[in-house]
Amino acid sequence: MFELISKNLLAPAVWRYTVKAPEIAAKRRAGNFVIVRPKEGSERIPLTIVSSDPQAGTIDIIFQVVGATTMDLSETDGILDIVGPLGHPTHIEKFGRAAVVGGGVGIAPLLPIAEALKQAGNNLTAILGARSSEFLILEEEMAAISDGLLIATDDGSQGQKGLVTDVLQPLLEQGALDFVLAVGPVVMMKAVSELTRPYRVKTMVSLNPLMIDGTGMCGVCRCRVDGQTRFACVDGPEFDGHQVDFGSLSRRLSMYKAEENKRREARN
Ligand code: NAD
Ligand code: FES
Image 1 (cartoon, rainbow, N blue to C red):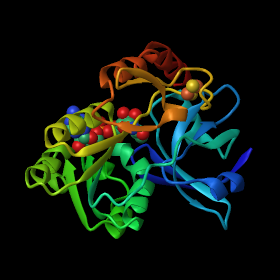
Image 2 (image 1 turned 90 degrees about the vertical axis):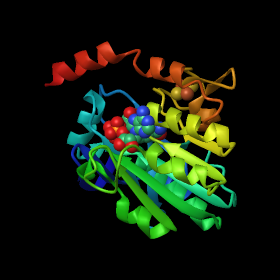
Image 3 (image 1 turned 60 degrees about the vertical axis):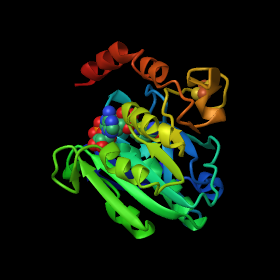
Image 4 (image 1 turned 180 degrees about the vertical axis):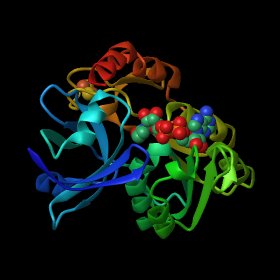
């Protein structure tokens, strides 16, 4: 059992947990994730490591309560299994003018990547989007490490009214970016990739398919990238957004919706 050190509600149904996991904290790098099983009978879900403190031996994870497993996680005082760190760390280099684009809970995995891009000497713009102000997370942390912070909310309650792509477009038109990394809903990552494509701005996205083992054995996390089958857990989770087949990713993500709904209803 992994001890829960602290539990903070960041936004409606969005939790930040600090968990004692010394071996993972010592090895983790930006972009790594863990696979978590909250308790006996729960599914296994991948969650990006948002931060770690190797001295204290802790890692932070952020999740949104959407189904039975995340409900289990939100109610637990300790986590049964945590496997990691998994996945390739983010490829970081000095691209020049870099933008990180985060949508909703996707802002959580973006934070360590943004930190690493800034540390590598990039001029960093953070573009954060949420349905409304109350769903916007990690704004202060992003502001502290960015050269510019731009916010979009669907309802205009904070920052510009609109989507992250509405904020990104003028920067692309001005030729102000050399690199973009986007994390959020699949439709958002697809829209960002389509937007940057004609400007030939390198664009990476972090994919979030279903996962079971996280070691390349079960095949559940397979995705189509550049016409080839890739496993997000061992080949990713980050891929070139201009090569990802987002349609097949969306279909695979909704494959077990009926079973997920049944399990959630059984819990209510
Ligand atoms: P949401 O649906 O509220 O969207 C957040 C923001 O994304 C919006 O405010 C908007 O700015 C942008 N967006 C959404 N649709 C868009 C579109 N069609 N075009 C352009 N921009 C668009 O987000 P949520 O409810 O917080 O859900 C978060 C999603 O992120 C979930 O689907 C979750 O699975 C996913 N997620 C992905 C990762 C990952 O690693 N890729 C990690 C965590 C969460
Ligand atoms: Fe099993 Fe990736 S989660 S192969």
